[in-house]
Image (cartoon, rainbow, N blue to C red; front, side, top):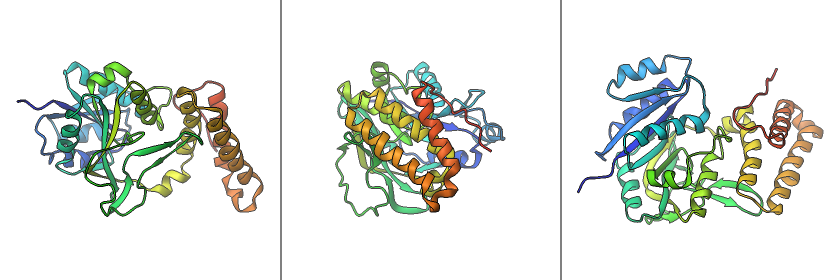
Length: 306
């Protein structure tokens, strides 16, 4: 019996060294029926030439522009469709995977046609046993999301059995192609952030299950501090949370909590408290993000700072 074919999509944007390391880790995968597609999102460094030189047998697709996480991955998904791939694995380029990760993810998904998407346990790269994500949860009353297991040492608390979660991070998301055919691909209005959460909600509402697979492992080169202070991350997380609430038709409580408890309180604190006078840039970004949402502006941000 032949194994189902998997296309692994690695999105690159000026990330030569991370992408090369990620591709090297994929070389060690035990699962035999996979191919890799690197989608380059208009990089300005020498990523493409370096990737082609080191891995001459890989498919490298160039979008010619930064299409964001959503556009770049959708570009890769459409390519995978032309190869008759049965599965697609969306994988961040700043990750390294365990050799058996893909085997475990495919085995779980193959067991039930109603499984829509699965993801591994993701650890911090520089803290090998500390969890960054073991799936995700949505607080429907407050309209926010969180990573399960965040910053916990892995002591076996997630067990060995795949478990249902509200969403799996797009850092590593395995999806059967037929599920994309039924529920659609990622929503381009998000550009980056919240897109995989909305997709998982869409798949769940279509009758599919989203699972975290504890025994599948990978490591992510992520710094929580840098994400918190980045203006561009703040912009997308602010705007796209509102877009997410709109798309999923969230109730009034989620809207009220988001706008008046989270957003208004944060903006007031950054405006009047002396300790947050340094947050002027973040305040401008947040206001711009809220304005863009209510003006119906999706896609990449357009704010110029400085």
